[in-house]
Length: 512
Image (cartoon, rainbow, N blue to C red; front, side, top):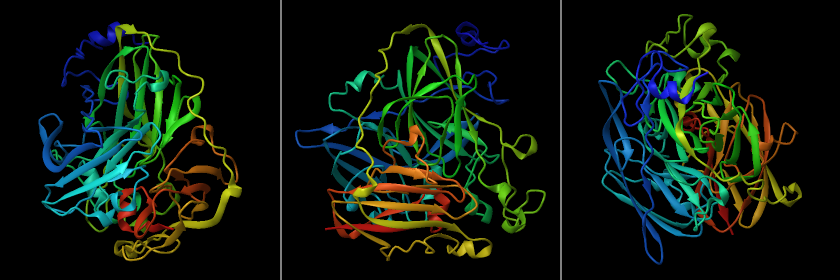
């Protein structure tokens, strides 16, 4: 068993220095590997006046170093890769100015936020090169982790892959934290988890072969806040990890290498009613969770992310134009991956948490976090059905293989019209052979049931993204309030970004 002393001094004679980036030791879960100090995203609280809080964001290109000795061309917000953490108070009015300095159109979407449709940052709010777009809205969310990312039309996948994403932390105005860790970057840490594929020259590989479109672009290297295989020195008994699966397509099972349990305290849209003890958590692209990790035992803990099956084994690879050697029959590229024995991908290192020799005491975890309204299906005035489907073969390149209710995305078509101040039941079914994370803009929903059974306790809170396994049916309860706009739509879509770009997306408006 590792302890604080032999970890701080290094393993196998190789030093590990926590005071700066770039010091290395062999990884616990992967080898060879670098251990770098975790980067904490800059906290941006905005310029506050009596009326509002203003944020200035610049979408830009840059150059980053993820792998030693190799540079990577990237995109970011106010920096070379990713963006700062936007801290927002509940009830405040925020104004966000987004300047686009790219040579291409982009957008920024406030994922999980309840905002007027014209400020949602969808493909309808395009920011042209050299232009600035301003969104202004009241923060109506519960305290939790949200995020912002590109939602550019048919370009969300490559733009997010290159770095156009960042976290948002919504908090109570007094920031008391209700007894939970709230010292940002010390005992309250966001973790943006993204898999990436690098070429020998250090550049990102973002291919759009038939395989990439069907399965979503997946990589063999994990970045956490833009760092490969990071380490973090813990100074308190209790760590709060705000976990975001920011990958384009990959689904992960998160757990500690020692199988140490943790407490899950929040899901996508806010706190759970009470902490839930768990030892493994599955998150699909777009989903978030907040975890409390007990470090009072003084032992280092390695958080791992095991990639889950994406349905590859359920279909004939020849249908995707790939031969038995793993080569694309169309000659576009070789398939690459960090595969272990029997074709199974090994788990990624997410974060090594090393406790300090002296740990500050943390307050007791509250037994109750938030009370949610009871789920009442009888409140629904309408039931809508959404069927997620995937085709096969060459027709998918034309964008007609990824559909919801048999239709691919059309910017000029409104698929659903809902009435303001009503509650609806959305019956979502995955009729395809692979999992899909289904995301709805504008609202936080409650999961009524999965295949007729109540959801697991950790899915009982507020959600905006839900993972559907193949042939699974999930019923959601959604309430539409505050904002109506008969002309400007919100989106619902698969959050595998390549599927979204290829057409597995629809539009709805809220009208009076």
